Length: 257
Image 1 (cartoon, rainbow, N blue to C red):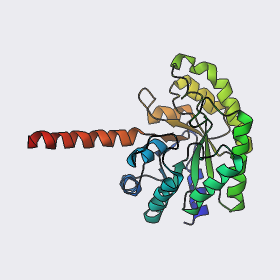
Image 2: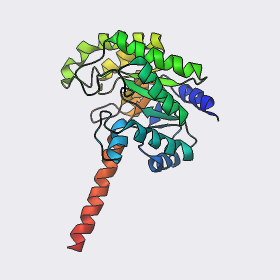
Image 3: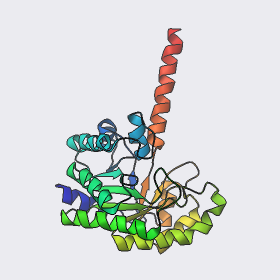
């Protein structure tokens, strides 16, 4: 498949009640392993890509290094690849679109694009975020790529008190509608784990809804029943692998005295 065909196929995997499962990767080697395990598509996690190269999350990994990682993955793997692109390394719509174009140039067919102010406080006003999404959409369309923009709201991620998540649902639904009108293809609500709230958002959203797995989250079958279209794992796979690596190394060093 060419890049446009991969983007179209990736979009088609998002089915309400039959979610695409994305076990997040961070380099070409993990892409190969996850592909061999049976993945239908690939998605990076920003935290994991940064950590694998010694950086913290929050766009601390240089843009050029991230683009190089994406190039390395697509050079050796034919599955559709979505990139967790945080805030696109620019608050300016034109700058965001130009940076996403760099990912398209190296073979990406989609992104996660979040509405929190990276390195700052709170979330971007909804209309400002919509303007940024619209700029990315127009750039990708001009290139003939049905690029998948997974619009992420960090309303729930920013609120650590789970008992307050219900109060955020209406705003989340409104943001999802505005993002859809701006050209988004998916709606990502990380940190939300309450079944009733997930079901409410899925019912109200005209975009495929993405839930991130984390401790306390419903299992895959339950999420499918609730109407979820995409399930991802965020930094979980990287953290699990690093823990196994540390355990194995510690056993070696303990045995060596």
